[in-house]
Length: 229
Image (cartoon, rainbow, N blue to C red; front, side, top):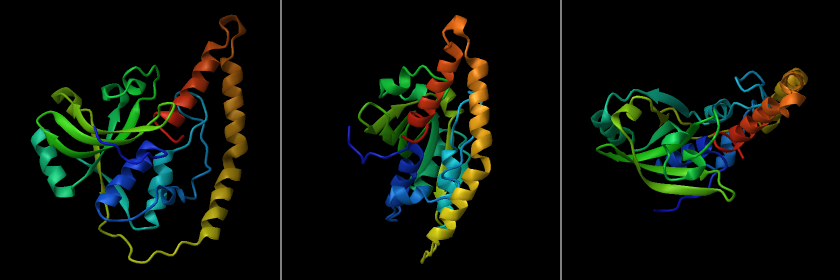
């Protein structure tokens, strides 16, 4: 098993890995320079606070003329051809299929999505890079992952489109920061009020506040397994 650089999130870390493969030297920090960075939501099925990490990173990528696009993979042979075409693919996968870490395979949560990079495939095995395993000390994995035909049907593949990448990039930091703060203050009070209302509704003293605990647990999991630590 090889080691990769540790990332701060599975999504941004995987994209950075792919950009580096394309010889694009970009810091992971640059992938968070978005007007949506401070935007919070409270409308998920888990009733807790969350942030849309993909929205943030995809918005930041627009500064550089880079976009993330879905790709259809019909079968294992088609997957091999797609890897040959793009070199690296971005894979969104349910954590329960990630057998190389108990953090994923034994995760007791409803939030199960994780991103890894696919480098190659042989039969029903994927050669992957996972640059963000949210153990007590963030770790990585680079090696093979066995899958089945049924699993393949439920995987979501994407590719990093650099066809419109900009040669020179001028980002107005003050402008982006102003938009970031405006977006936050426009909805922060409503979001926090909704969260507090959800918690009050969920807290049942007779049951020890189990539902409220579940909301907090799902928020933590979103920050670690599926989101940003």
